[in-house]
Length: 428
Image 1 (tube, rainbow, N blue to C red):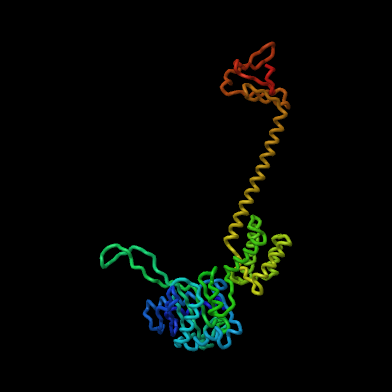
Image 2 (image 1 turned 180 degrees about the vertical axis):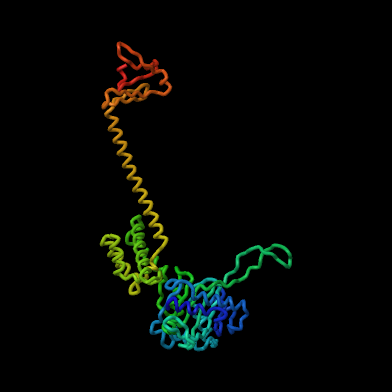
């Protein structure tokens, strides 16, 4: 199924377009016991119930394809008598009116669903008269086929949190009664799949709310299909390959960031070519090899990553969109900016050191006189220039005087003061 197929079914799930014929289900407690059964003609439900049950059905067709929604295929043996696909075919043909079949299916879910609390199992039956469309998507008033299908939704039922509330009968604020509330579905499926606007009895569309733990026991034991990893699981598996190969170091972080940058560029290029950001890019072994090569990975590391990639994903390589991690890329870009700033700082520090060295070299070509610990510098390149460094409080005491026809600089010196000329203290 593609996005258009899913959207076509979802669009019908509103009061004006809904054609659900039957709603069946049961409420299961934490002891895996059936507490009550549900048997309703869907269109006869009260408005509020109608809307709530419809929202649950719609939720099983929500989320991203390849992540929350996975198309699973039945193995050949499941399509023979006694197989899981045949079980679903019988439920569909009964239009959910066979109590014995329903009880058996409820029990199949109860025996395999890995959940500790209370939950609700709901089954919907629908018949969709698929209208023909022209190549430019214009509806024709002519039926193409009848798509008869089931929706299953498994919803956790949770106790509301303790809280205070207004008790109208007592006209006071007090502890509110806690209720058992049906949550949105945790897991569900649509059978048969609706592929290219047509019934596909060989496939089922599986829904999971938790993309990290998609209840693969339902895929395997209830539907009889080989489990399929979600996009999130594929992303985690790929990042684990990089970490296990490179090691948990700064180098691993850089390589993973470089790879994410390459994936981002491929997705952008594909979007420009097809004018769609969702156009899938399958990452074959050759694709991964190209990405590793363009990021200058050593040959031995590249080979290890390629081998692990093949072993992990086998004959169903993931999409680039599933392995792309926006957070990792943003962190990588942030580190690149920080590294660029650090390089600029290092350059400036080197330039500063050069300036200091030059100043030191220039200073070595001068003679210096210390007056009470302060330096003066005489520029040897100009013998007519004399520079004296002296404490500010003594500046007003300095005078010039002609002695023996020579102009002299007179600096009063106290007894406790030490004077050095060019670093020598025994000249005065």
